Length: 259
Ligand code: ATP
Ligand code: MG
Image (cartoon, rainbow, N blue to C red; front, side, top):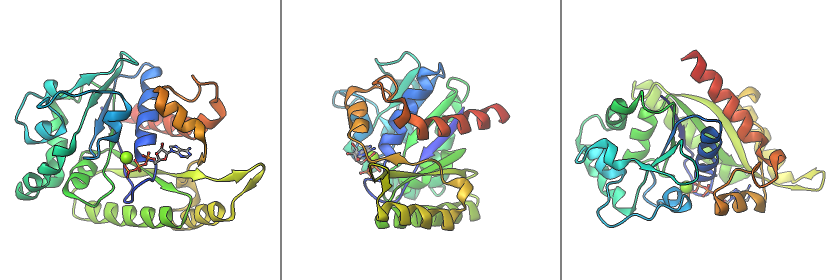
């Protein structure tokens, strides 16, 4: 299993968007894919239409190992290859557990070991805060993707995420490498890119190197449509808008082949 963490340390940077649409694309390509909602806001769980009953096992129970791992994994109706470990707002209760465990960053990695041969890909939607949950998620990853809004706020989010990555790598708390930055909500008016988008993306390229910055996700209502209808952009008839996700997918498939 190749585990992809989608992380960015600010709200509204496109983490859940990228996680969901990447999960849909991977499963459409026939890859067995596990999505993990690691955000107590549980947007990914909601967007995928999973209606949990109270006391249903979620990522909280998975991390605490208080129920069988299989009981935390739910099949999704839109594709037979797609599964979810959901979250709910109780997930915040896992922060103390992770902090007291001594090796918080290693816990999720250990918990997922039994299913390493069950799924080809795991995509984790990380929370926006630099929390214990965020660290255990990055600790579980093989690769990290950082979406960042094409704005001053997004540039700041990218800098904070890179800083966290190098701290965790420096102490051996993760083996994960950053494989791409995706500028999010890149604004164009006709053939003209907005000044703010252009300078934010230029700043990102200067910061991390041009080769790491993937094609950007354009500001578009069609992305919201895809999310609302739980469909890929190409299934909705907008394959051009899907291009950044396809480039990411190809990169991930190549890494998986070499693994
Ligand atoms: P949070 O940190 O709060 O979890 P996030 O990083 O997961 O946020 P998203 O929820 O993925 O960010 O995206 C923020 C908002 O942008 C969402 O409401 C989503 O519907 C919207 N959105 C998604 N794609 C686009 C797009 N291409 N253009 C404009 N808005 C978009
Ligand atoms: Mg989110």
